[in-house]
Length: 442
Image 1 (cartoon, rainbow, N blue to C red):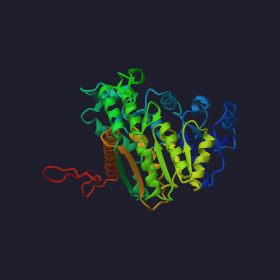
Image 2: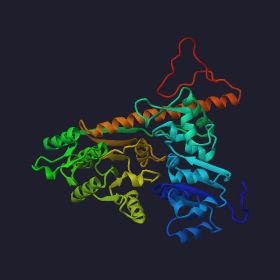
Image 3: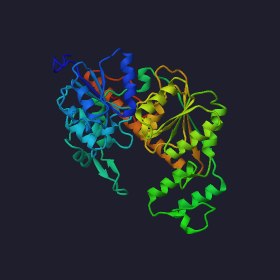
């Protein structure tokens, strides 16, 4: 392939979440690539790096287009969107930017392991970056009204019309390379464990009060002035989640999960490198303080630390200088290599399937042969169990959708080559039962 502009040479733009850029940098260096430009920092610095004629690979985070809109008109030979679900929301400015520009770039790629974590609607804008008519519609809103209908129970929920799912999966299968881990030779087992913990009597009374009356009040509080009340379900949900982490009104009231983490590190995970994931920063701070007091070497990744500090902390963990890495899931869920560890503990689970699967993959490596362990800490009869069950349901639905797209892609390839499958193609874990004779998929 010859570059568009012979004077400039080959120019490749990689757009990824901030947490994934260092992994790109490491892997490009491992491949012997040297002409890499990291488009971060002040605007003038980015502009200078962009026009550097010696550059080949240009790395920028997904928000970088705001500081450097010039990337929209630069003569790129290839644009890669890593973790492309960042453009799944059609209303987001970042989605509008990448779907509007780069139409004349000859090579456009999107990479993601979970393109549809919540709904098949999320396929549209990602494939629109590649082909605006991928589903036969030129915009998201026509696509939604043409292939989906509103639920009679929930006006915010859209369900596929008859035949729509098959059409969507055929489009995905025809335009995308779908590769399972075992197709790439990765046969690493994942072992999931749950540790069910019980509140103290006082914490259970507080939890039940919030759940039933929307009132947050500790047992020692006598007057109504010290209690918090709300009429909003989202606020109630946040209070319940914080109580499961041991916090009420920003104070640590219960150490059940923290003490369970310490027990794991002192027994079956003794001497092992471990990543611990948190939803809230106050949980992270409290757990780090507790572990540091007991002699465990710890580092933290959270939004209040600068990017340079986060990378130093990651390198310390990867090199084995510290045993435990405590991570706030929003800053490191995408692309960051934490494969020093074979174990991840979820102090509090993410609320989205995308975040859960991405955080699980941070400790995955093609070089590993041992099983990976994931430990979920949950409070009995609480929203912890509800979140866990909801994630399991979303995972099943998303996996079935991608498996069907894979089946359709295989059938289309066989048809193009004029061949017939000798046996019905069976999706892993599910057999399609038919009445009468077996149906052969062409």
